[in-house]
Amino acid sequence: MKKVLIIGAGPAGISAALYLQRSGKVTVTVISRGTGALAKAEKIENYYGFAEPVSGQELHDNGIIGAKRLGVSFIEEEVVSLSYNDAMKPVVSTDKGDYPADAVLLATGASRQTVPLRGLKEHEGKGVSYCAVCDAFFFRQKDVCVLGSGEYAVHEAQVLQPAARSVTILTNGQPMTAHVPDTIAVIDKPITAVNGETVVESITFTDGTAIAANGLFVALGVAGSAELARKVGAETENNRIKVNDKMQTSLPALYAAGDCTGGLLQVCKAVYEGAAAAFSILKDIP
Image (cartoon, rainbow, N blue to C red; front, side, top):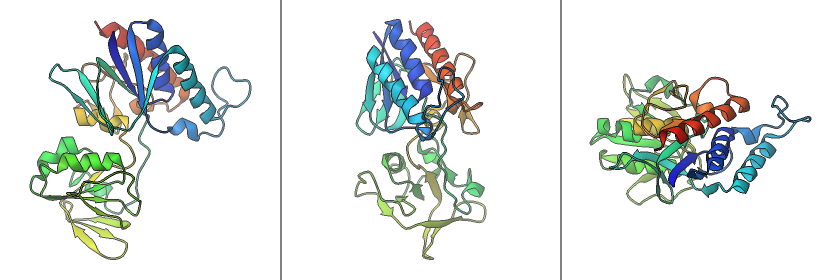
């Protein structure tokens, strides 16, 4: 049977998994690590079918239990990249390995992690980037930094290494949670500003010291759906993935559903889009 990979175990991803698994036509695997925004909701009382308020964590857990009961497979790994193989089939890369598929659904929600650094937003597109695969070419033989402290940051740094003169990970005062190769430097001091007249020239730390840099790649937390879509060349707009009414992205065999597509950031919308994506995948896979 054809393989479908779903990135994200929230309402959109689980809704799609249920419809796909019940079809009996495909094998379904959900890849995720940790919980998303839903689990942080203390009470939900605007969702159909609950006489009393339910916590986001309970709704999240029950969704996964139901999917497992139907036979959906789950992998607890961190997704760091998305690509296509020579047969133009999507391949999901995690911190543990690569997973080829016949179709991939992006459903990790919307990226909500930001950092209040002076000069960061002002230098977006002028040395500040959110995609190493997209922009490494523009930083050939230049000194670049990656902002982050996890597997995602290490992955972005490794993507930049073949092009850049030097790559330094800046943790902004956070402890590293992933192994860093000896060829990549790490500075764990808190950052205060991104500097430069017209383009990025340096990064200043709260202790008054600075490091010269031509670019800063933001890789905080884990890679969200929009970041993964941008890396593979799918069309995005204002940090959301552009899809049609069938939840298809601009690339073949790649779909998106839930908060990552923008609009109403509610469970009901995510559940609907997950179901719609499942029906599209079943129709599109030969």
